[in-house]
Length: 142
Image 1 (spheres, rainbow, N blue to C red):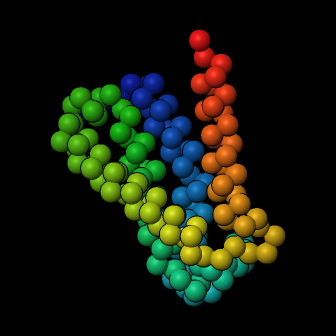
Image 2: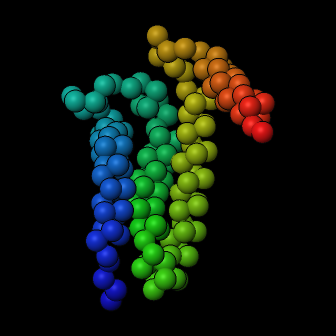
């Protein structure tokens, strides 16, 4: 058994702490979807109750990605447990793809609540800002 160095513990704990809030929120949303009733401390989401499968896929794959992904950065595990590192890496790729595809599906097919900007405008504005920054970097580099 390999002991983790102090710096490795800091990496794992830091990544797990960063993942804690979204994972707990997702777990509460999963509980809400399984009970078919809204929890009192989570805002009611009719989009989630109407089509819960993409949300469940997104939450499960994201939680798996966050927790397993934290351990992928450890040099001791990469060096001493290469089979585990490779297997969990392949699992992380699948979880990441599922999380991304389900997130894109929800963005495209779920209707946004009142007060949200239209999704096409927000996506195009993000692309426009990225394009402007890239062009600015290209024109200012020597």
